[in-house]
Image (cartoon, rainbow, N blue to C red; front, side):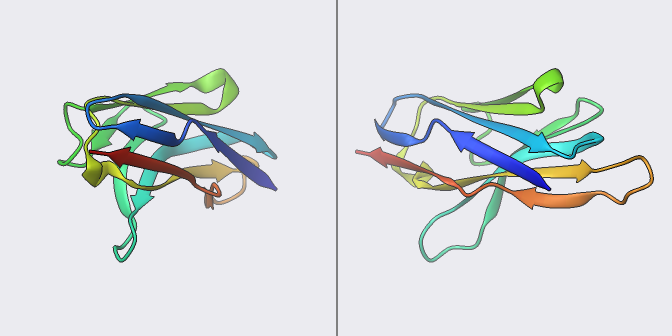
Length: 121
């Protein structure tokens, strides 16, 4: 029983900025990874940025230099700061977390409900 709650989506003009946040709660022993994915209409869901428990982050080529992922470990929270937004960033953004409910449990994937980001030109 893990829940991911996302916030921060909305409408922005091209060149603007938005910050998304995602907090995990519930039966959490550890969070092995958290990150953001997005899905535009007619397209497959794609990785945007991820943050692993050892501090390693990675980004899709399309957002490198414009997006920044960060985390607050104590709160199981991850942020996605988005700068220089372009219309191609328009998509539903989904938070993903890989969570272990106990030390003996296998890690499982959890997904948020999604938050819409719309960038107008």
